[in-house]
Image (cartoon, helix red, strand yellow):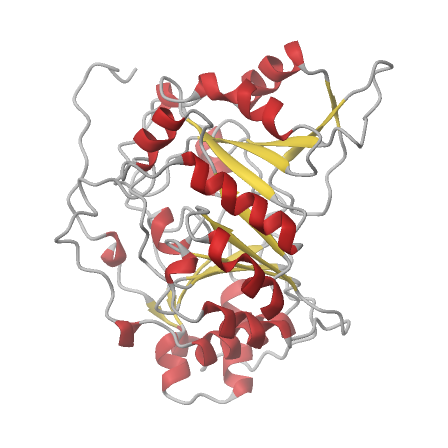
Length: 386
């Protein structure tokens, strides 16, 4: 067992260099693969969701994501010319849509720090799925800039936002973001997003035992009946810089039991294939789901694997494709794009990469002892988004 009193060791390494990326161009020699919107990986999982990191910067220093010990004033962020341009992102996104992607989520870092992000959203909003339908375009944010940007984001074509909020108590929230940012400003951003029509809004609360579990019930009370879906996420072992420990994980089942003890819940069916959150609706006096009261979700990122139907790919800020949130290597798409590869070459390379996908980290970890080492370095969540 891990000793909870032992000093936390945070490795001082640049996690963007965990391994050399595999050149996507290496797949060009394979037989040409077209796109028909039905690509599946080696475990027969389709490609439906693309998460795009638009910046490696964030104005928060949450200790479970970008702790100050690593991301200090001397930390070297990517130079601007290393980042994919909006046009490059849109071109790559178009290829993923041809392979069956229906949803695009913009992440970071903090995506609202990327200057002119509305122009990227405008470009993505023009794309259509293979069925001719608009994409589901959403964004995950810490909410710090949302109050001033919500209306422009909606006008550009953004449909929904997910806001990270780890508690309502101002002292707890300031401590967790570690830059003394007030919770009131994030709540104002959520209100602005709701007024602008960016919904349904989801709020993600990372629950870390010993830090903010006492905020679970206040959060549930605050957002019940507001039309906002509150989701509780188990503190997870992404990357290496957050000093993760299993004894700081509060299992989702305990979260559900705690809320159910005061606000009765009833389990709901998944909203879509590949859904990461288990859904629970607030119940009425007869034990049925009262839709006016809304629902919560729990994401059991540690205690319950959901690899079996994972349909998500992730594109990093400078154009590396990752096939899993816990991946140890990426595939370099930027070089292929900047060498003016033809569209059919991009389609074929990405198709072969996804078709060879075998990732199922959470399932493998679930079969191990709780204190066993999973081995190897993994990409940081702050680098490819959650």
